[in-house]
Image 1 (tube, rainbow, N blue to C red):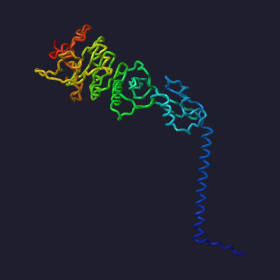
Image 2 (image 1 turned 90 degrees about the vertical axis):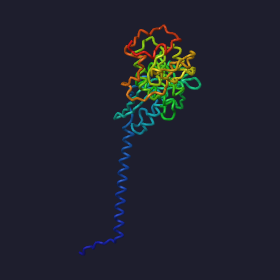
Image 3 (image 1 turned 180 degrees about the vertical axis):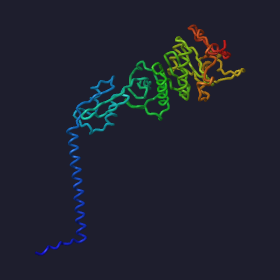
Image 4 (image 1 turned 120 degrees about the horizontal axis):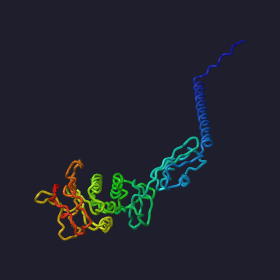
Length: 357
């Protein structure tokens, strides 16, 4: 029997065979991948369905209310939705949510964890309505009344309910957020009664409905709030009412006033009694303020100068405390309720006082 001779292929035929085998392998891989993906989709849609949704941290809003407001419901796929979009919509639909997190709890659960906020201040609008905001700068709601919250003047809001106020676009908004942050950090926010930002060089902060803190500009706000808090708690009595201000040498002064005077500083009728008034040096080299010769409060000797000295070591520099007003030997018994509107800063805090008498 003759052996059949093997037919030889030409180079072109061999190349075609190689191409055919390569195409077959590629098609096989594509088909296998498709089968795997199809199986995965079927598994996802059939097996990974939401059966339970739980809520943690909610107090102002009910759990069922929050669940109903989510764009994910029981029976939906556990994975086939946009988590960032769901959370963003939830934060806007429920303004009193400060933060929200959503995590999957396999095999079929979702857990929503929220942090709520409260209204910290009421910004007065041009139409005399009020917009409530949180300490973190979230816009919470509009209301016809201030709701007993600290009122903020001089700020125009261009944000929607549920938005966080953006920084860096409006100086007055930035100033408000700065004050709220510092007051909150110092533990003073709960007793803030007003914030007047009509003039950013004459920032006025009402505290405890008894004190008009004239912070001037906000350059040294953190230090000044801390210093004012120390003076109020350690050097002034529970019956004291009045104005706290800093002079040209960054020394703190207290001027007794009425509660009505303090409240007026937080309104548009605050008057032209500025924080800044010319400082002078008397012949003895002691720093004071210009005298009030006509009794007009707009030129009161208690006015401050916002041209504060720059000193990074506040706690060790004696220039940052008013030795004539606040001294360890100062007799608190001199504070009483007998003073009236004629009470004058120069007569009460004598520049010649040396702390030894």
